[in-house]
Length: 409
Image (cartoon, rainbow, N blue to C red; front, side, top):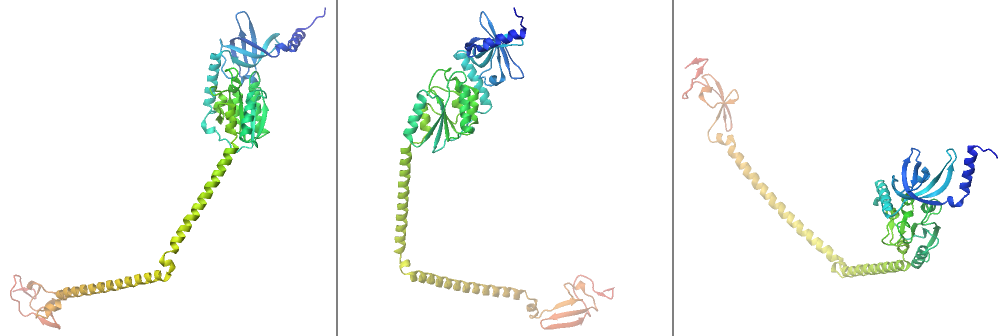
């Protein structure tokens, strides 16, 4: 018998397993044990049941799209392929997708993912964009088969036969469907721009709609530069794709109604606007015509000289009033001036001198008391019509002392 190396044996077994088609797309149910995420982003864990265990690895390229945080003890369904890790001679499941099993586990995964994405702001209203008013081309991301595409087509064409519908067919459930949906959204944005995108599918269970809860789909919708209408399931169904989309439609038919304006409604609206414009124009013309008629019937416009005569008469009246006011003002000023002059005349010292009085000055200063003069002083007497120079020979009266050359009298 031939002797083989360990490497040859492991390589041979790996080839056998890789060639077995049933092992390349396999789904395995089990309980998570020893789940670890390394710095590389790769995840290693074990799936086990009551009687056996299966080693599993999920590489970063797949693990980054996990919609929940795997924990030991969780029941999950893993899909992927069975192969051999030749270095250790260990066969293991290379996991492509991992989902909690059962409604409770799915709901937990959904809550965890929603909380994480909401914290990043992916569902904030400030990121929502308005739909175009009159789209010419609409992209549709859904399954090629089924009622969804038919409903969107019939409703869209009924509302506006001229609108162009462009389909990017995808799987809407099952393994790899989320990646297909996300890739279709990115394709429209990068290579085939349209005015609006409809992304959706028909109704179903939570598991059936799960692709529209996957993180890769949510992020593709959020990153889309094209406004997105989510049309997943029926009115009671709700997914993360609905929350991140710009508009959520209860059904695919409603999505088509939101995306495609009804041609007849638009035409009726245009006709209504035209009628209102004509009515407004006619009303404006009638109003201005009536104003013109009233204006032309006024006497001043029929005989413009009347308007001028009225202004001339008003001007004459104003001039007369101004003249009278000026006269009254002048007379008042004259009387005020005479009164002032009379008052000044009363205060005029010359008037007192005319009555026989005189102002006695010594050295240019008026004398008020006898004590301010002395015998021998030279004084000046101012009379009404001139001055008299005099010399003091004698002083009588007063309570002070008269001085003569510094001698007491």
